[in-house]
Amino acid sequence: MNLLTRKYTELKQKSKKILHKMLKKRGMTIILKTYRLGVKIMPMSKKIIMFESNLGRNYTGSPRAIYEEMVRLGLDREYHCYFVLEKPNIQIAGVGKTVKRNRLKYFFLFMIAGIWVCDTRLPRYIIKKTKGTYIQTWHGTPLKKLALDMDTVHMAGETGIDNYKKNFTENTETWDYLISQNRFSSEIFRRAFAFDKEMLEIGYPRNDILFAKNNEKDINELKNQLGIPQGKKVILYAPTWRDNEFYAKGHYKFNRAMDFDLCQEKLSDEYVMIVKYHYLVKDKIDWSPYQGFIYSCNLSYDISLLYLIADLLITDYSSVMFDYSLLKRPMHFFCYDLEEYRDTLRGFYFDFLAEAPGPVTLTTERLIDSILHYNPEDFKDRQEAFYHKYNHADDGKASKKVVDLIRQIAEA
Image (cartoon, rainbow, N blue to C red; front, side):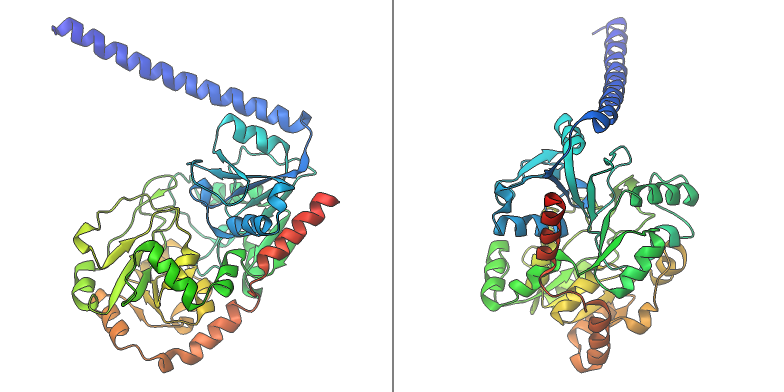
């Protein structure tokens, strides 16, 4: 290929890319304009329900638990239920259907669906009809500061704290019901989300399974499903994401501050470890050097099932601590960046070091030592206090309470 031909080919390819981008942008503009018009003129049905978990990245959490309670009661045949997913080929329970995020059907369904159930903020371009109902389940009791309580923002794609707060409050204004795990959360949500509608302080639907399946038979079955050896204790490592460690908006890094080689050396005789990323983390890590010790779970696996098989939890500032507390099992907190996270990135709502229901360590060496020499009596009082403060509303029936509400709304 001569120089002239090569230049022409390069120019042609570049032109195609530019044209594709223009068409894509214009196409989305047309879709959004049509959607906004459709919201105004299309009829709405409260028999159509939209469910979404974790920005559509998986079939998990409280929306899943609520939907599966509808399936258990046979209501998935009475209502038209749709679960929004980035990968709509994921199998869901019952006769409900999946819909791919940001496709024509997705926008059409949001035009006409009378009830939405979601655990994170929906995109700004999704508009709720005046008579529609949005049940926001949220996704955890907060240790780290939220929304209007934040002083700075370090997240990818955000243009400043004032703009972040404005966008947040515009979103929360669309919520009609907000689920809270405890009195502590209810007070914070009211303020941090500027939420003045109905608070459902009923515990988290996603935790109902911790009451229903916390028994030897179900736990052994779950271990078999994941290929976890029965003869070893299970550590669940479930850290949160870091606001300032990202590739792009909504795509965060997995920080490998833990020395997994040392963990394998010191713990593998007695333990195996399951590593569960936060849903915002997009790293693909090769765990093969730790085969037989580290088991990783993909994004689609519900963490509530992992709680059940875990003999102990390692986390940091994640809200998983409040859910796992229901099982009254040991918790360890690996907080290698405690000062930066607490004082710079987010700030905390309570004195974490004083309330943590387990050892807080800053290095892998100290973490391993805390696991090997853990004495339950040392943290018994803290664990009980933590449980009574944050788990008083969880009773294993939250999903049914939300389903009862959905039926009331649909029949009104």
